Length: 615
Image 1 (cartoon, one colour):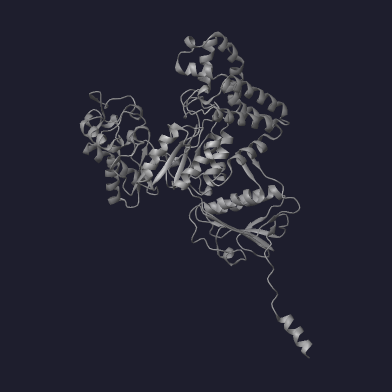
Image 2: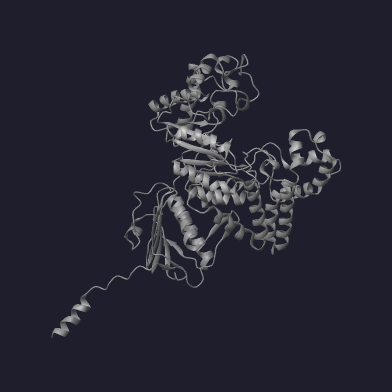
């Protein structure tokens, strides 16, 4: 009788729950991708991206549904009641608009985040971290095969990106917003006065863009000489005894007089109009034009003298605008650049709580980390940064990622990008914008974009590993000579303690004849090693940097307007074959300019005139 009772009790007892061992991604037969019935566009797109990437990795295409039905397991994309009731369910109440959570249990995968971008970014993070997918370029995604067994989990992971604004302004991101989203860049050319097509989300399926835009030069449009210069010359900067009220271009030739009370009224009214036109935005610019011609009138000069910097009168003005904005539009922030003459903070004027400082690194060396005490250029910047950080925690960074005197010339800065981002994140900055060649193309821009964008999203990633995996995966059989050239550029500049900012010629970055020759040889070897047309084309595009270095003397002379006088016959002779190759590569790979003002076609025409017979 006792034995019978024990058996009955054993049969009645609930079975112990199976321990979570994760999911074999190669065995998802009968699974479905479940999205909420009211999913927003970016969640629907996230489900499609999961479906696409899993199919590429496994050869298996899962159906996308809104109800679980008879599925044996499910991938839940986005928060909804079906997901919440599942074995992997959770809420997203504590997740910000880009925060994400990934949960993997025996019979379920759940990926969701805050709206509007968290879920989509969660899908990309899942495939990178648990499948090994690498989003290298817009036309090259490395998707490894899952094979016959690929365990994932168990996982319960929350990720919160430390930066509110992340944008690397390169052609690769500008020209393909879906690719930029895969790299989790969230700003899309965050200009201060966006055109209608840029005033909101470039595409809702990508989760839109951040409402916090880049603080940029704004006075040229807020108080223009064309509108006010004739009748109100006193509105504009006094320099050399006259007002800069009649100029060719406000951006380059004029600044307002920021101690004039009527200027305050005009600029404030312009800012109010911007806020009313774009109420979704969180911040607005009140910012100097891109020149050094700040006002030297008695009132401005006196205030700047007391404060020890021209930022004294500028920040006082910005504070006054911000105070009026606070009264009328609570919660909106006013930003200004700490840039060139305004980089040094005032002695006593402090930014209001609703004033954002966009601190620019334009004078800094690209080669050394920003906090390298051995770099004189960077040490001076850090002193100003520390002074700003002592009076405000509302700091964003404008950094630089190319050589603006020659976009195609290689810049040995890959080893400083990671340390710089980590330094600023540790210091508590809220966003970082890297200015590159915008949509024009620059040397190794795809490699630099891969490294920069990944580190902006997750500063804990290893810089060297990012460089190595991009070169290995993107250049395949030709990777070794490409890697050797990249390492040589950096080893050479660092060993010689080269310090230089984002404006220069080859010699300024330590690129001499030996480095030029080594680069040409490396790419000759890479082209031989490339074992298919796609790899060869990638190598050709990368080789533009080596050919640009080989003709830099000619370009710099043409750019300066003294090519005929400064170039000797031997330099011209040596550069001729490389110029022909460079022009052909630029046309083939869609590279339109050498700097922001000169197209490849214009440079080629100048060379025809210089050489006389160049085709």
